[in-house]
Image (cartoon, rainbow, N blue to C red; front, side):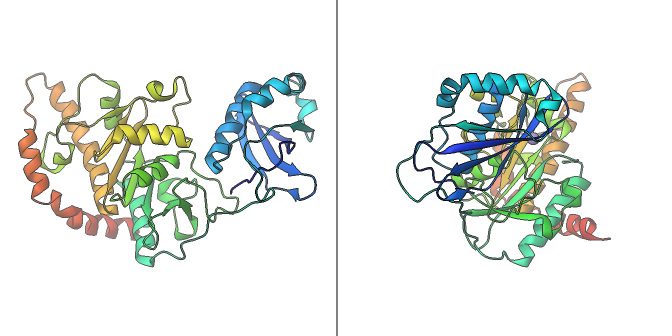
Amino acid sequence: MTYFPTNPRNRMKIVISSLGPRNTVSLRARLTEPRRGLAPLIEITCSRVFNNFYNELGRHCQGVSAPSLRVADWRKNDMRRNKRLDDGMKRRDFLTGSTLVVTGTLLGSAGPTLAQQDPASAGPADARLIEDLIAANRILAREGVVDAFGHVSVRHDRDPNRYLLSRSLAPALVTPDDVIEYDLDSNPVNANNRPQYSERFIHGEIYKARPEVKAVVHNHSPSVILFGVSTVPLRPVFHIAAFIGKGLPIFDIRKAAGMTDMLVSNPDRGRALTQILASNVAVLMRGHGAAVVGASLPLAVGRSVYLEQNARIQAQAIGLGGGVTYLDPEEARKVMEAGENRSYERAWELWKLRALEK
Ligand code: MN
């Protein structure tokens, strides 16, 4: 979905659609251009604190298009209206079905009038690639790397500027019908109003920065979280986890974006994560999980599985109380040069068979 703002008097219509749990409110907003009609709705869920609404709105719009909304101006110009809405939000009866029109200033020069344009599709992906993506989702769930949360994507086989990722769904439940195609800004080609993973920017920004990467896993695998929060560095304890090498970087979202909800839910945070990942095979995320990449789905999935195993074994080895001997970086390098576990082909054959059997 892309918005092409034109004249600075464009208006944004905000419809308060429902109150959510825990102090959140769901809003639907659309840009209106009086002569050319309405742009599609954008859905926003945010805190009832109104400043957060603006942040969410700005973040959302940056996520979908290059010319972003000048949120700060609204805040200044519409303070009185904001106050009224903010007051209104405290009264449930005010909310249902109520509508508010806010006049905002949009960035961008004259161009095509307000219009919606999804990115073009690269066409249908290879059926075997989709099958592998479904298998990857289920394998990660079976192997305890993801549970209800976490996701895996693959770069489109026809177009390196597209990637494939499930709609927002527990990975164990993903079917081919759930797969959404995205451009590298993480704009959906064919979302059709299906809910999307808020952290899809992890995938898009990594694909943008790392052309050789063909698959990305984001997970919260429990033992890996240990090493994102501890000063004890993750090190390879056995040969299969040699890809850990000299260790992995840790992304601390607080350093990149201050106090947040911990989610990599916009392009800026995705880029910050990608910078810390640099040329590594994985990046730990402090207080969150990890992002793991590979030149194929078996590589990204295999590394995710053995990253969790290594972290668990390392923690247990440290718990024994004696000294721990890690793989020497030179040993790790030699394992990698010998062809990193034969690209996990044997494991993949087994895992896929198990994952796809009824
Ligand atoms: Mn996450």
